[in-house]
Length: 275
Image 1 (cartoon, rainbow, N blue to C red):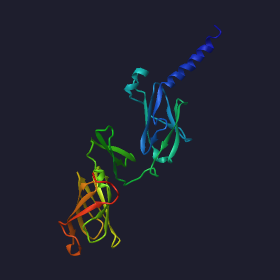
Image 2 (cartoon, helix red, strand yellow):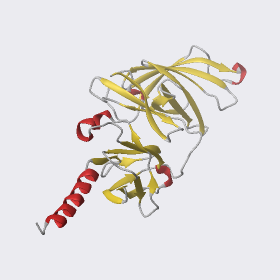
Image 3 (cartoon, helix red, strand yellow):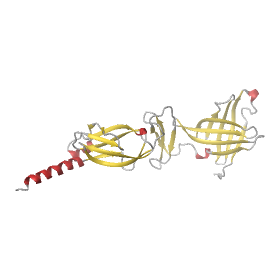
Image 4 (cartoon, one colour):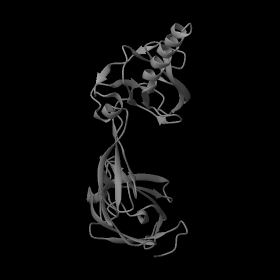
């Protein structure tokens, strides 16, 4: 019987450790890559105080007690969640350390990686990017920049094949032109819409003009908003090696050497074979 008190003390210590062990820091996971304004969250069955520490900074108190129905089978109740918002743009690019403390006792210690754009909060950016064959081979996903989260968010999931044809991308030379003109075309997304940007370089006059416009199927209508001319073309893919460019208008007509209705043939110059 002389060992009863020490044994009870030991059981109490083990019991406390067991309770603290019934929980987890779920985000960020070990080795995760994160950026922008995101959440740090997890759960614990029974705690009075949840804190996190990033690198060697001070401990941050995390709100605790949100509903987590998935913890009921383990904890016997559901008010076990903890979550806080954090701007990872405050951290430098590279590896960082996060530690979770439950009632002052360290429970989790792990490293994660931060990739950001070099400032805690950036205003005025716009852009979208396509992730083909995601989440499966039958679908494509469009990600659009969100200023409020300083990150890309899913803006569209649609059946595969609705994104701009990769054949739009290339370098082209005008076949039936008296001048030496070279085109570079790039397909992408702007505000979730398929978009074509055309850079036209007149090698005779060392002049560069940029046109852009929305893509519909294998046709794009592009215009020039940055020069003294009001010029628009219809760019139509014939195959992966040939494109037709129809002049829609050029104003003022007295200053243009091209006319509405004229059709020019563009031939690929970057070595891709016809398909």
